[in-house]
Image (tube, rainbow, N blue to C red; front, side, top):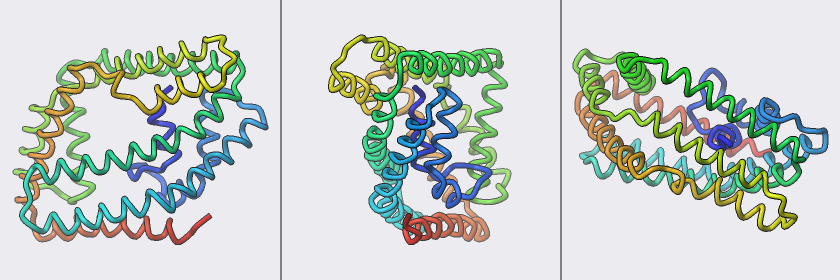
Length: 283
């Protein structure tokens, strides 16, 4: 199961493009049901149950997680106007991952409730559909040349910085391209990681055990303890890339024009305002 995509929809991580963050968040129960329907046909009771579980998760996220993210954004916004180092940037990233893991553990509950209700046929359908999607994405990736992969990485990084800073200078573009060249391609490792999790899920779904507690424990292990499915090389390369990107962020921060600084602060304020709106809206 590509649980990260599922949880992204459930938790409304703030990188969802093309739609209003508040609209996505406030319609999570319906959207989660719509997304799951791409992988497995749920009956009416299962659909109703999923929506109720996601609504419950959203209430927790609104009252517990959003205030944490809000405080972190305020801290980063204040920090970038002061002398900082690479370690500070890495610490902020690490803190956001702690919040993410808290959310994953909480999102485990609705996933378990849905999984327990699936029939053997639905489980098979789900695994086959996810497997087909992984294979399709892997084939598309392997068909790319190394130059095309690099160009896609550069484009992704450029777009990310443009979103936060506005128009980039030639010097900033060069810094980003330099960092992209120094960034290891971990896409193949990520496909391997995803496939390992899917294989583990397939094994759990295929067990004929009638012990629901055992089933829940095994599925929770797949959802929550994700590091076990990553190769040592993947973990090592990811750590190196984190340092590479933190160094890039630090260098970019020293090159900001007054207009870019205003743009950056405006982006922080926009996300903080969105969080405030979501917290105040309630259910």
